[in-house]
Image 1 (cartoon, one colour):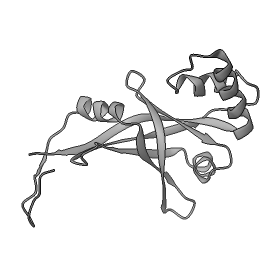
Image 2: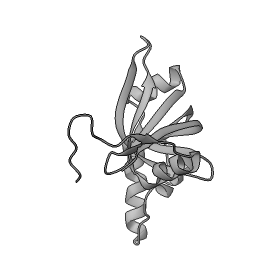
Image 3: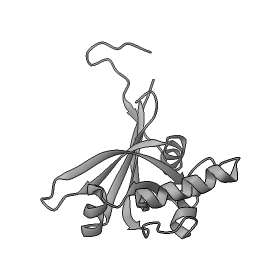
Length: 155
């Protein structure tokens, strides 16, 4: 890793929306920011699946999480993903939609959760996954991105 002295680091350079979308697609961990009733942000690290065609981030969570309560109250959110070297980042802002909680293994929400995984070679493992999603009371947060921003630091 390059070492920089005080004030000697690389400066930011312009980045296109396509590059921002690419950064989002290359990562799996990000920080989701939602809005609390008191106006302060609530941030949590999440694993997400980015669909570049639809420009939507899908996040698996459980029904009892604070972020779910906050998104029911205010559907606006932002997703911040940093590159592995932390010299670039992308933020997707937009409105969220919450799926139904999965209630029956293989229902629509369960299939959406399954599509967010790499898949299972053994059908028995897939069935166990879908059953666990019901037990966990999982749902999908869909963040429909309408605005992107970020930066890349020049070397």
